[in-house]
Amino acid sequence: MSATLITTAGSGFDVEKLRNDFPALHQDVHGKPLVYLDNAASGQKPLAVIEAIDHYYRHDHANVHRGVHTLGERATAAYEGAREKMRIFLNARDVNEIVFVRGLTEAVNLVANTFGRERFGPDKTVLLTRMEHHSNIIPWQLVCAQTGGGLKVAPINDRGELIVEEFEKLLTPDVALVAMVHVSNAIGTINPVRECIALAHARGIPILVDGAQAAPHMPVDVQDLDCDFYCVAGHKMFGPTGIGVLYGKAEHLENMPPWQGGGEMIRRVTFDSSDYAAPPARFEAGTPNIAGAVGLGATVDYLQSVGMSSIAAYEQELLTYATEILSGVEGVRLVGTAQDKAAVISFVVDGVHPHDLGTVLDRQAGVAIRAGHHCCMPLMEFFGVPATARASFAFYNTRDEVDVLASAVANARKIFN
Amino acid sequence: MDLYDLYQEVIVDHNRSPRNFGKPEGYNRIAEGFNPLCGDRLTLYLRVDDTGTIEDIAFEGEGCAISVASASLMTECLKGQPVSKAEALFGSFHKLVTGGESEPGVDLGKLAALAGVREFPSRVKCATLCWHALKSALNEK
Image (cartoon, rainbow over all chains, first blue to last red; front, top):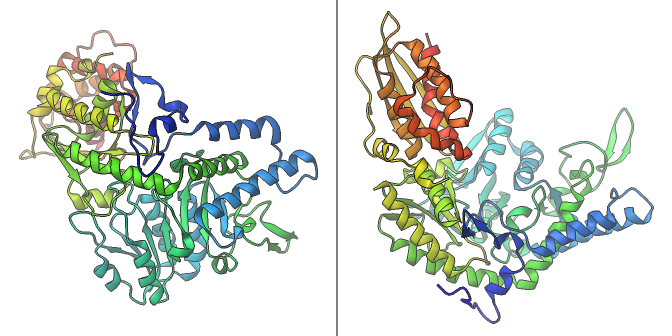
């Protein structure tokens, strides 16, 4: 196999050159070159991000929004600079619409416990889709258990696509909020979120979008989508762990009560009562993950230098190739075959449990995939499988790696059949 | 550590054709084992007589080769044995797959085929799922 295969998407997309930006990709696992296909779980980090965090800790670290000294000012500038970068990345109208959180899970919990809690009640529901990740199910369940009300679930078809007509029928007056995933982590389906948002808004229903799998792989424009909330996980977009972003429309954030209390989120404190800071500080109690935000800012710079449209185009080419090659392996059945799909391939192999496949691919071929229910148990139940194997791609993956995966899957079948 | 130390012939065989698979008649103990991390799920059925002998033992469910083979081997090894032996084997088996010292005087027999699991830390739970189910079935009165 050619190690210098160059695949182009549009002009100048040089995957081999981009791979050099990711130190972790260049290692052997069990004697084989690592083939990292677990990007939906977490992305690898470009050197620019690692160096930005290193530089921050070596030179600029102090607490933010406090010190009048030089390091405090530098840290604050770096932290707030990262917020502005995220604003541009998501095309939010105002930088104060960008709240730094721990990750997607915290973003959803924040909205559920503030915006949600104020709207829920015994006669109210939250409308989800069948393909939600547990992180966009459990926070709503927890709040509903306290406020009353419950969840409604929009169905999907056998290809794993949302049935939009059914979704629309479920938008009845009891729905306090819609919470739906932009791109399914488990099967790759790209939901028609823009259309869903318009349908919800036509009935005055606000909508939160889980963008964890969309932001790393395609351009996202929250103004164009017109969503009320958009949630992003830093580590999935090749940034650090422990940092994420909640985008919320200013009109919502300004009217939301605080969630966690502490320093940073107040205006004036007495033992009788306190006034809370304006967003986003209101939702960032305590010393934030400053280094994480700095790393995320560097990630955004990096992704924009590559170009999100180029990334999306390249990954679509890779998906087409991988779908064709993997479908051709005897005994392989793809789970989730949506027409509009991101570069995620969930599959089962006749006679080989996904968990065993994961171990064999790792030990025999250095291929890292995910095996399991992908935190989407209701979706797995729909497809009638307890688990699948999942290969999820990023812009640094190559056709050669797809070939390695396919031949490793074929070899695994020989062990068990 | 070779992959074939994990997927030995006996493991592959017990996965392909699990012994004592299905829901037996007249069981008087039952327990479920579930691994939320990977979705492996099994139900264990036992018939224990008044003298504390495991007269019958069987399982059903779905899981990876390690968990299915482990359950199959466990049932084969415990059928007709006293409950006290099952309890002793639990401890020895756990040490076998987690890399602890082996216990003198306990013959694990065919269960020793699962020793390779100790080199695959993420798979230990698969091998012990059925044993944890066994423990809760035996503790249930």
